[in-house]
Length: 298
Image (cartoon, rainbow, N blue to C red):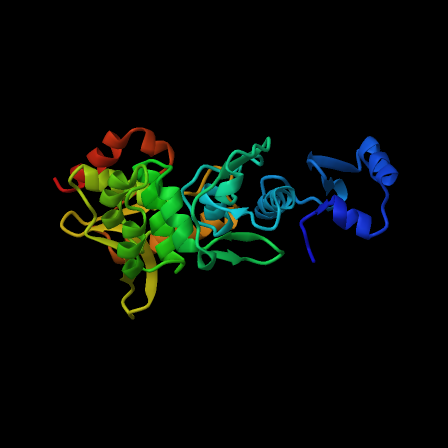
């Protein structure tokens, strides 16, 4: 079974390795020991901050904590691909263990002793155990700020990991937990149409400022009804298209060329439409985003 470059002492011993062999591998630097009786094989380890690097970290934590442990909270959200959290730093791992082990401490692992039902835990391949999407979402929302929470909800909805109809049950299940009162106000802000965390955050800035977009993912067609663009935001009265521009200065030339071609087609078929682009940097000055949207209506 693939274990993303990590194994336990028991597994190594079962394959014929003795303690002296393992000491030799550790001294040579071919192996490392992230936790007691857990080893990582340098030649098999994926890049630390990659998705498989995260899985490797979770697998090592599972081997250290035992068969009743599983990933939860922010780590589970990253395993499910929910967008909105800061990039993983290659180190922080959140794991859930039975309540009886709540006093246990393992350096490098954030331990939680939440009461998780068996049906709320699932496997995602390669032996990785984690909370399911709904349980992951309700645990993680209690630990983040509003904008990050809405990003996670939007992403989970957009990817089909959860459905809007499940929100009421998820909210009720969180009642009585620290932070649940704030989170209760955030559930209605979720929108499945958001395709990135940047879109979510720009939308929240505009909504908070009283200038919510009329539509998201609006389709524009040419004279033959063929789609030439699907835009992130549309303010119909002012004729403004808003794009959450995640293309950075080092984006692939092909992506930049496609983006220019798309913009040219929009301007050719809709010459009166204005296009505003909002970047991650613009989130540091929300007044600029609001001023741009407001100016289009004048």
